[in-house]
Length: 612
Image 1: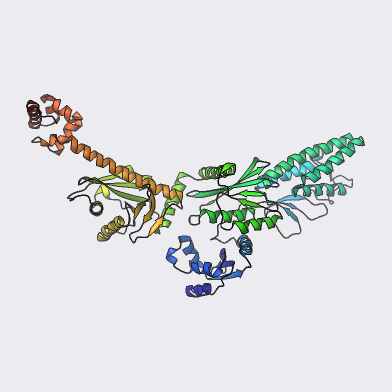
Image 2 (image 1 turned 90 degrees about the horizontal axis):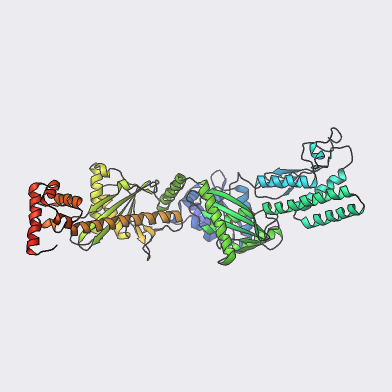
């Protein structure tokens, strides 16, 4: 379909809830989304493309056709969207890593059923339990289950291998009941498997009660060895129950979720609390979704993480409110058959738990990301945010500082690969100014800077990828005018401050503002550049004022120009020391005629009672 045909189809959709499925020319699903009103939501993709994020523009450019499924409610749309995302794994949806997977415990369907680890559910007639948090933890559960119930862990097949060999070491160590022996132990094996199933389903109290009764019966019948054997099995099952809670969140009181958006990687963390105690942590690292907001990212992660699980905690704490929190609560509750609450705490102990989860996410990202990766991803994000064709590796920032009509100066600060490059910092003293004029000052500074670049001056021979001007729309228009006059194609943006003098946004020459607070790392970088540029300009302005005041007396002496004055102040440090210096010492610093002029000038001043 052409773009116009797609647009026309979108406008013909009903104002009803549902799911839309975007597909490319090969009919591969590239994005699945839900909507309260399909017509309004889908039409947005094909209107005002310039206002879309880069990711959305890239996705729209790949759409060949799309389908919609109308639902009766927003809740049904949410459930359907979740199902379709899991099935198709669309490239433009936020996804947990599908190569990690969440493992299951599989119980085969045969005469002597066996437990094993599985990566996914298959339609093979077997029974599956889970999913669980990690393969390592799930394998630990499986091992503990076999040990507690003395089920075989070998590769023998029953009844095929019964009686063919002597029992292995596990039987003699009490880890297996030796189902390979000639005795008919089928009923005992079925009972052990049934107990294992009850344990995996969370029915620990029932299994414990049955075994306790069996142990007491054996003791009453004076079968003490059997009673001791059941007692040991009970202890193993109690440990297994605790471990099962930790890994799967089975019967957990609360799950606490946290999220941190890093510059290169982000992290989703789940802290499992059992009976009020922190029992385990699960986390997922993912490539940072630069354009979606935290609410959208978290909603997708919650659905992926908890979707399809047979047991969930009764309460899940969230770091922020979700727009689809109500239908999501209903979906998870119906999934497990009991009420699951999604809660966003604002203060108190629960908020402290959220902070802990978020801090865990921060630490995981910092461990997994190198400094270079963070800087590269940060600059890529800034480039995408500003719509630049290339990543801005070298950025130059300019600011004007003045005190009235005197000492008008400017600073040029350079950041390369996200870090200050101080050897390339430059100062400018404004010339021929008729008083303070920030726009004229900025025009002069940029003209001088890029004239020297075009002339091949080695101090200005590197072309920046981005100009940042301390000021608003009018300041950056001046910069754009200078660049156009010199036929230079360099993107320029103004740094707009808030009432606390912090850079809150960047502004393009056409007046378009780009908010930078959505990505904290970009916000911090631009703020650092603005502060450094301002600091450098202020410091130079102060130096100029100080030098002018200190040199005022020396400037009155015939034969003492800027060079001689600098020599004297460098050696003597102050005008007072110059005044008190003997002639011989003055002659060691400047030529004899200049030294005599300075010496006699101050002696004449002293004789006339003048003090400077």
